[in-house]
Length: 69
Image (cartoon, rainbow, N blue to C red; front, side):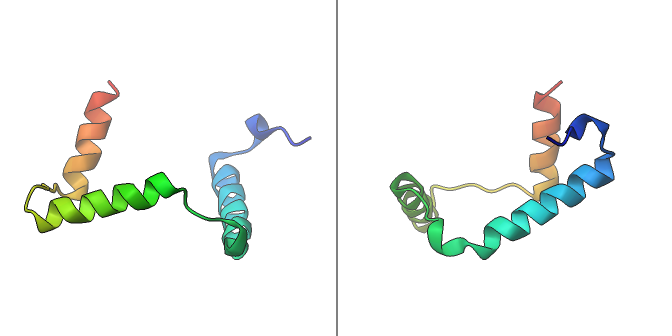
């Protein structure tokens, strides 16, 4: 078995890309769960009802970084 602890960050990212590409090729067997479809419908409805708020990607990243401190 491959030990990922000995890989560099670049090698780990490359491995993730290869795995993702392989998984993405087999999209027929991958289906979203029903809760995901429902969540998307609720989000779309919130936008339609002007009940949704948005922040920039930079602001979202800052919030996430600050919350992990």
